[in-house]
Structure formats: structure tokens, C-alpha cells
Length: 276
Image (cartoon, rainbow, N blue to C red; front, top):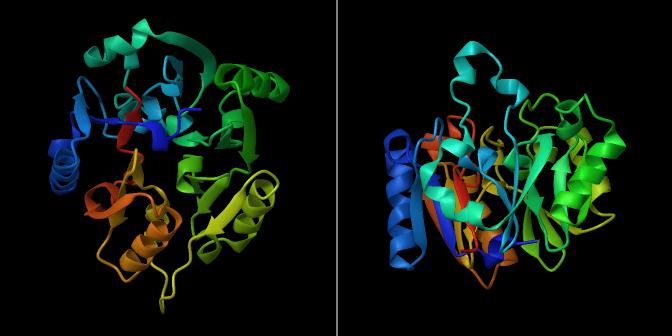
């Protein structure tokens, strides 16, 4: 799998500079200062480009899928569904090897590790017209790797695995502080993950856990450059230090992310990074 460590180019929705100007300007400057290629995707309908953009399986292989999530089915939200085929400035990717996966899927429910993918069982709920064994086979064939399935906490309607874990290399994943809000699901996640990977949980030593502390796990990594959400709360510095500890080879920056987090996502959600 092409993991974050191998990527060298990052894309954002063309709506992001207007919707989240402080966040975008902060990231733009750091990327420019570090010589990282970054571009805006044209004709997007929301800022969450991770969810609808194709998934890079290898340098020359991209997996496209059906982006039509159940949480966007009201008339108001249907108009925010981006048609990837209408995005004009990714034509170069369509000249590479392409797999068209006949499944409803969100890119936010794909966490790529070296030889496996982590996703929640939300994918089964979104594809009820197919048997689970067929969905698993289709995913394994498309991504050419094993899949680790986590239970879906239905209180979290998106069902995205990138809000639970982030791959940090060496068969290790960092897991969000889910135990602060739901110890039951935290245990279930841990039990599923530890069969295949080493799990390092984020923890925060604060008097009162903040409701937005989930967002730290949704950091952005492009090669050895890492952007961690900063929310103006006590957990900020602790999150930075823990992520620096597990990624000692990386340059780790904190960026003001409230503009995105208040809308329901964070830095992995607003980005699409590839090896170009």
C-alpha cells in the first residue's frame, strides 16, 4: 500500500481557502516553506476531499468507488456530493491503472498500513445488496491486501476509521482517546486491532476531557511532514508531544484547526495526499 510516509503531493478542495481561511493559510505556508507540492481540486462541492477522492493502492494504481453515503441522502445534503468525474485537474491519475470498485465507500473509512487496511463495518451497512463475504473479497482484490474490520459505533454516523486510528509505521497504529467517551467501544477496537498491529493509545492528563479531543488522531501526514490540529485547549500540547514521540523521524507542526473541527472533520478529512 502507498502510505502517508511515501506521499509527496497533497490536494485540497478549492472551497477550503474560503471556508477555512486561517487553517488553509497556515498549512499553505508550512507546505511552501518545506517545498511540498500542494494544489486545489476544482469543482468540489464540499471541503472533505478525503471522502470522495480515489485511493492510491500503489504508485500507478488508484481505486475509485461509489461515493454516495447514507448520511448525505436528504435533499439539502445531496447537493454537497462531489462527482469525482467532474474534477478537472486530476485527469493525469486516470492515465494510470484504475480499479472501479462497485461499492459505496468513503475514503475516510480507509486507513492504509503497509500491508493492510483498517476500516469499520459501516461498509457492510452501506452495501446491503451484497453479502459480507463478497464485500470482503471485492475489497481484498481491489486493494490487494488484508482488511482489519473494526466495529461501527452507530452513534458516530460517518463510520470513518480515520477518526479512530492513524498508521505510524513499524506495524503500529496510534489510537484516539475513545476510552474517554466510550470505554466499551474502545475495548472492542483494541481487541480487534491488537490481533494484527501494535496499538499506541492517545491519552490526556487534564481535569476535564474536551469533546473535540477526538480530532488529534485525524492529523495530516505528507512524507515526513505532519500537521496536528490545534484547538486552543489544554490537550493541544500533549497531543503534539505524543505524536512527535511516535514519529521521531518527522517534522511535526501544530496548526489552528477549529474552522474545520467545528464543521465535523479535521486535517486528514480536508486533504488528499498521494505519491506523484
